[in-house]
Image 1 (cartoon, rainbow, N blue to C red):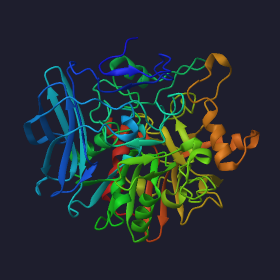
Image 2 (cartoon, rainbow, N blue to C red):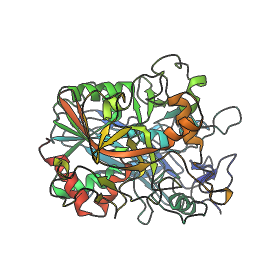
Image 3 (tube, rainbow, N blue to C red):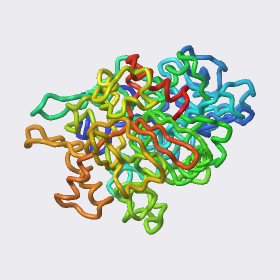
Length: 527
């Protein structure tokens, strides 16, 4: 299948939508119609200087900046001078180094939000985005965008934290990724007919991934459904806007930069795929929670520690190679699992739940034929008020809110109720409202239905990193997980954690009980 648009095959691409490596990148042919750009920062405040770096085959391009929303609000429309510049082979890692094409001081009256940056010339258009945080709190709720995960998955230029063009053979993932590059197609705007990730392939057949089949066929980033504004935060924010729920916006990078980033907000909101955090981000969140903040987390997969460069423009995560390759491997800043003994900062201490006890549900051979929702165990909890659901009912099954990656905890059952097990690393009380099974293992009956994408590797890695060895016992522990909907008390604050990436699917589908629980958490009185 021929690749479309500006997508090109990596040196070891096998042509398969799932296991292959292809990516989007600017052409170094100055005669090919193209225009691309990126901002000099991820997050700005009113009064700060916005910079836009760009390259184009044309001498000028139309620039439109708009605040995204139910109805986009155009705040700037102009024509800027552009010129051609080559794109370095290592642009994913060290940035594109394109010339400055436009700059401006952001007006004080621009509202907090996610702003799209659209560049257009005859024959080509591309989109970028930046986040405008509030100079001081306006809304009662701050949406903290999962920008660590955005950075990890962005594959524009060829490399991210999953596949890449690095290493001695030019085929390794990149432990360092730069923000000074465009966002891959699908990260800013969701393709109208695109499938989401959850999918139950027929039993006894090789599992397929329709979202990746779609991406390769249509000329969309392979990771469009895994991360980015368009996949998770945007539909949640649009639902909030339609419900009259006001939000201010900031990024995880802001938490890293400013320990007071959440000061003045009674409640914060995290949505979608929330996998990568730095130590400093956690410090800021923990301090705010301990002081009485309330976090509403409708997201999953709290897993990896990262580091950021001093200018916040480069993210580092050595992941599975950290013990050998990370220069900080002998410290607690090693960029591996939060639950790795060397790191010594259990994920549950902040969120109440952890990715290493859950991970996959609703796709591959990983609980793909499960209920798709949270089985309710405590229907009388305030979270469930007005939902109409009782003990044993399933929340969100119709819209498949449980997946594709979830967070859980080891638990015991007493008289039909789940309780967190002892010695999990919790720093406060955890109340499990609902849960369902999840796993790191893509089970199979033989080669005819084995999955070459997930397979057994994730279960083996969790067994080794968290439990120190790979054998039948640790593989069993690593592969028998769960995803929880729970409330966690930390300090004087609390975390509501519906620990699933796909919760937003229930809002997109307007599934009434899911909407009711969401309203309870965002607008209700906790407790």
